[in-house]
Amino acid sequence: MSLKAFAAKIFAKYIHYKNQKWINSPVETQQKVFKALIEGAKNTQFGKDHNFEKIESFSDFAKQVPVRDYEELKPYIERVVKGEENILWPEKPAYFAKTSGTTSGAKYIPITKDSMPHHIEAARNAILNYIYETGNADFVDGKMIFLQGSPVLDEKNGIKLGRLSGIVAHYVPGYLQKNRLPSWETNKIEDWETKVDAIVEETLPENMTVISGIPSWVQMYFERIQQKTSKKVGDVFKNFNLFIYGGVNFEPYRAKFEALIGRKVDSIELFPASEGFFAYQDSQREKGMLLLLNSGIFYEFIKADDFNSEAAIRLTIKEVELHVNYVMIISTNAGLWSYNVGDTIQFTSLKPYRVIVSGRIKHFISAFGEHVIAKEVEQSMREAIQAFGAFINEFTVAPQINPENNELPYHEWFIEFEEKPSDMEGFAKKIDETLQQQNSYYFDLIQGKVLQQLKITSLDSGAFTNFMKSKGKLGGQNKIQRLANDRKIADALEEFIKR
Image 1 (cartoon, helix red, strand yellow):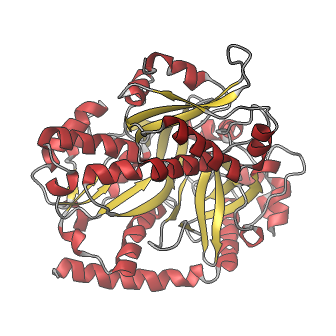
Image 2 (cartoon, rainbow, N blue to C red; image 1 turned 90 degrees about the vertical axis):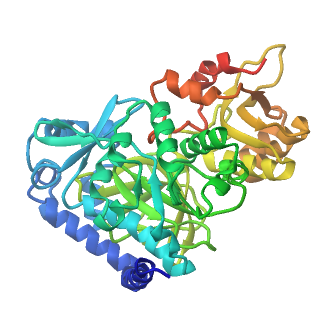
Image 3 (cartoon, rainbow, N blue to C red; image 1 turned 90 degrees about the horizontal axis):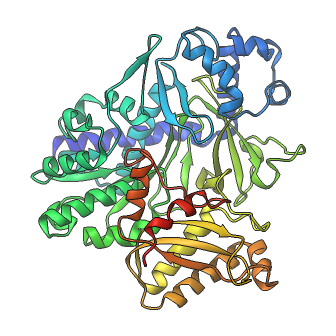
């Protein structure tokens, strides 16, 4: 064992025991965070507008501060973007993470000197936690690659702005700089396909041990390696044994990844966003990710089924239940207040608090009252893949409300297969039955002959890559929307249907 690996194990043990303090006192920890946030922002414009001086409890806070999404918080954010100080949080933000919103155009998410360290610490602790649990530390001696956006930052009224992954690239610890790839010059390449080719050239000669990124884009990187070398990724990188990912569910990609790599590797799931780093996988044995309760974020939860109701109740961490679909609401030391991130989560454990991402509150299918969510379609796809041995590159789902020939309506699954199942009809039936088992509303609609069994539409190879390219969203942090309640994506995919 190298000195570096030995030191990593010692540090991992220290961080593990340090984290037990807040893990074992979750309610008290969140109360401390809540009080610190209110005290920290009471003299800001937002704090004055919402009577922070008089807030003594969460009940007071809920009465004073309504739940808002980006569009509703935008009047305050626009003042920050213009360069005003002490609007949402003391002073100016250190950065804006610029994201592309579907309804608001470009979004500018503030990152402050108080919130930035938590992004870095959480990513570090996820790896250290893995080292502590497994005892595996040899990978620290190899090269690590993080597929991310360009680190080149613009500036707006004295505040630097860029993609979150590009901002984070400026904070890679010194002890990792020599191990980190791609190079700064390669990372700056904006065109994603050109960038991937450059990354392949840089990494092929190296001892790659850790690879990180959104699964769909890492898959493209793996495919390029295989095309260039005619070898499995695991044969090219013999010491590659850890994949770190976030942003989407890995399960639909797992079979294809293992085929590309040629063997299984350990993985760590992360739950980062421009608004905060919320959770990371803390166990290779238990389901879910550890919710970070001591990272400058105060959490609220609203049952997804009640979210649009006036009777919706805002819950704190001590009031949540297992396996209920919640909309996650956050208040942060970056100046977001009762902010709807848009993600829905479910708790898989309450000791400690672990979550899975179940979908997006705006991404669902309920054209017929079924309210199917991403978690359900991904689970159904995973079970069908396991049962029939197919490989897929990507998929999305949309309702077909007005089929031809007086047919019953159905859910249409657009799938780009790498390898089709031998029995496509059985594959579709397995997906449908698994979905019925998970969603009683969908079950009732199928059994009541309101809907017919789902139908699969096969897409050409490279369809989703070409679709994302046509939208200017190829690579980086961009992800395929897994399901929609309309046919905007479905209609755009028509030209890629396999004839």
